[in-house]
Image (cartoon, rainbow, N blue to C red):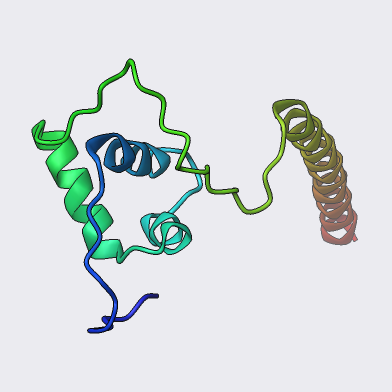
Length: 118
């Protein structure tokens, strides 16, 4: 987290930069504080930009492409195919576990019936 430093000059940012920063916060799995930290700005400033963006005060010229802003890498970023493969593996494991629990439940019910008939 950045702290206030009186020796640090005040920076001015163009609207395209602000909009690009705000749009980074819309990506799933990315937090405002992470984007702010990677851009070396205070999270409060980014939150204020988000508010102004939603109010329509900050608008980017879509014809311009901002090359200054680098996207923030996600933690544990996966491609869609990797994610699908991981989820399929998880579904298979859960099905096996569910089948085992069903068999265990039947086994316990059978044991109770045998014990109660004695």
